[in-house]
Image (tube, rainbow, N blue to C red; front, side, top):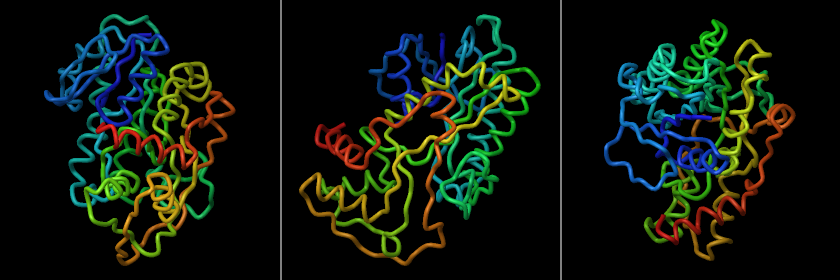
Length: 312
């Protein structure tokens, strides 16, 4: 298929582009930046603001599917800048769907949109692990913006404009993640000597669900083959993508063990956050045949550390 990947130069976007190209798809990349580095196996690179439907027209012309990853993704930052997150995450999705509505070319079939959503739409449900039947209750503007985008996408799918697969990803990790707002890149930066210590809230016992970025990319590939599944569920189907529950303490311990270097920890007051957020990924396994192959905690840390040492 001809597939457009928005946010193609981001951490997950790069992995998705590489996986789709390896599977034989003709991949286009969309970026709003003029300075993104190359090196992706793409047929074309389009530069446009994802919020501008008219500017997106050349990028969507003739495509069969879109993997929509372009987004602002920091939950805590969204509390400070909620408007920006809604403009990009919701507004960008609406603009993309508007551009697809009038796209020339293509196979004649409804375009398939694989939407990169987030576990943040769930908030902090009491029932764990979390499956797709959990009632969304986002606790941040980031989660709210993603849920709003999901709902617009589902409405457009129900109206017959597109087919849609929503991937609610938990915590993507592994080689290439340089966002030190996240626990693993920050801990590895401390191990590499770039920072003197790692700040942890509370006792480090908070548990989150981690999934290797290569396993996330495989979920996108599987989703591209889910047209019939989406059509059978009103045009839109939602899947969780997660793999390995681990506490912050366990992540730090794995970094120290696998790097052979200390990670000094500075304790900060505990935050009012859920003590445990863990995914149930049974649906994507049953319906799309996906399973996590590289998401064991030690593999996540080892792959990320190898990239750090290589200067990636």
